[in-house]
Image 1 (tube, rainbow, N blue to C red):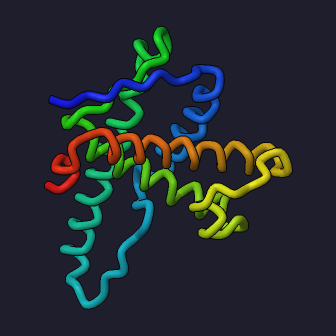
Image 2: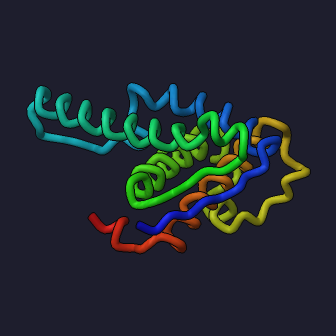
Length: 153
């Protein structure tokens, strides 16, 4: 089993984790992006949404689970085939929420290019942007360094 271990700087990542946890709490009852569903039985729609929210919560819990006591003592997180898909999905959900809540003024092109004068941003926007980049980097690490077949199930 392929495994990627990443050492992170605790003073940089810890404040981002606070923001991730805050956003995770907001995702407990709502999807990061609600699908548009028309002409469906309301009971079936509610059951389907419930399953999607539950799966999203499981993914976010997997991501947050990386930042356990071991992380706070050694600064290391590990990705492997048992958590890679869930972590990629959780990062996407939180990034979408960051975009909608704080980063919309920057625009999608700017967000994806990362071409931002971080020093010019006010503190809440800077923290949100750094969190967005951190989660994007986690996604890229998983996709680049783990077998792509684990992401194709």
